[in-house]
Image (cartoon, rainbow, N blue to C red; front, side, top):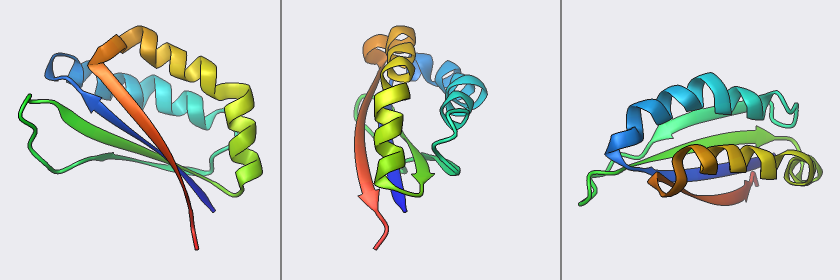
Length: 100
């Protein structure tokens, strides 16, 4: 199984909107691609000096082939929507992990 993890640093001024939009719009759009069979939405438990909060969204898929299909067909558009909405107030980095 492949875990696609996105960690996002969110500034306090957009946090409520970010949480609402992720739950109501972005995460459902990612799941509608049919690539991922499950997800988790998590908050990192730590205090930051600038008041920002880090969130992780974890999506689960069965194979690297499915993950590559997501990257080819869907990722750019979905990332662009988030970038357009939040600019530098929600900065993301992504990792891929494999169950062993």
